[in-house]
Amino acid sequence: MAEAISFLEPRADVLARRSAIVADLADLLAPECLIHEQRELVPFETDAFVSYRRLPLAVALPRSTAEVAAVMKYCHRYGIPVVPRGAGTSLSGGAIPQEDAVVLGLSKMNRILDIDYANRTATVQAGVTNLHVSESVSADGFFYAPDPSSQLACTIGGNIGMNSGGAHCLKYGVTTNNLLGVKLVLTDGTVIDLGGKALDAPGYDLLGLVCGSEGQLGIVTEATVRLIAKPEGARPVLFGFDSSEEAGACVADVIAAGIVPVAIEFMDKPAIEICEAFAKAGYPLDVEALLIVEVEGSEAEMDDMLASIVAIARAHRVKTVRECQSATEAALIWKGRKSAFGATGRIADYICMDGTVPLSQLSYVLKKTSEIVDGYGLRVANVFHAGDGNMHPLILFNANDPEDAAKAEAAGNDILRLCVDAGGCLTGEHGVGIEKRDLMRHQYADVDLAQMMSVRAAFDPGWILNPSKVFPLEGRNAA
Ligand SMILES: Cc1cc2nc3c(=O)[nH]c(=O)nc-3n(C[C@H](O)[C@H](O)[C@H](O)COP(=O)(O)OP(=O)(O)OC[C@H]3O[C@@H](n4cnc5c(N)ncnc54)[C@H](O)[C@@H]3O)c2cc1C
Image (cartoon, rainbow, N blue to C red; front, side, top):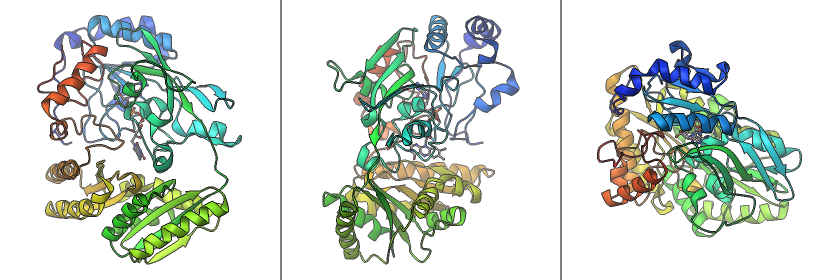
């Protein structure tokens, strides 16, 4: 296990009261809603950032907002750290507990509460999975736009925590652009409602603040999200290139021309081979880089947009242009892309980075990324949301070799610094978590971080909510 990232020292007073805390929580929750036996805590010791793990003190699985509020009120009273958790698919260690923390899991709050087609909204409990929202309205011709590749498992609460995105967010925006309201339990157990079905509530945009706050400002128990009518038609098209740089430059030129397809996804050769071996999606294997470009609308609209994109691709010496011929083929193309991380896990351990760069820097950053990873003697596969400039280099390594693991982390940090230096940022959609906590100093000046921490402390003066995430441990203005 890698140990480069340190954890907060657990609070001795909290650890000493473990049995009393469990007994008190047992008064607030039904027996099936509280986990405290060591072997049953194991599934909660990490998330998808698997190199790091800690057993939590206990896991609370409340069934209602009132139960969440009761747990928060209790933990606030005794200064017990609380780590909110959805499905635990965070790739940045956002849901990894600390030894003195109560993990507050939302998995039992998994009901769709209201579908309102007149206002095109759905109100759901925080533990509902992302895909379930779209599935619930699909037969009526609607969908929920943000589509993380983990959408089968990840929850709406976790999506709000990380302000998650996905392949189809180029046109429709990420979680924050599709979120209309939340019910939020504050650190002392007070319940507040932010936003609602109507647009643009007056006053400060606290809803915008909560989205992406990584479980540090409160616990989301319910969310109202935007539903979108399905387009008349949608068509993914494959564009193969002889170099990653040409593919990157093509993406930049498409966006610069003011063309906004629904999705532009990028795969380099290693990623194409890995995904094709898994999904048999029909990706061309004789190219160095592949773009999956999806257009939508009427047949005429799609033809029109595609003609402009093909013209730009030809200027970048595109080698293959393949339009998808059937719904089955389209599904396979997306299956290949969306299983990229899982398919990579079949051949090697990997860490997935998540930097964002201005599109004009895409080709340069791709080239430098290869050089960085080569320099550490490792391999990289790139598969990412190119239209948003949101890069996901997957650095392949051997987790059983501590030296290899350390090299992978170092390469990842170098790549994220490169993204910042190229005018981008440390995270596009996976959040800061514990993974990028210390790199926040590379992105922000101390004065910027201090201002953010003041906002955080206004919601949670005792810093009990997910305390070891987002901000460097040293220099925090924690109480
Ligand atoms: C294979 C794979 C593919 C992925 N693909 C994508 C992708 O395409 N796009 C993308 O954006 N991400 C992706 N991710 C990352 C991850 O799925 C997202 O970050 C997701 O939103 C996490 O949801 P979760 O329910 O698992 O939350 P968790 O991992 O449990 O928690 C995430 C964060 O949110 C906080 N949190 C959770 N629930 C609540 C709540 N109710 N109230 C307040 N805070 C809360 C947690 O404390 C934590 O900080 C992928 C992950 C995997 C493993």
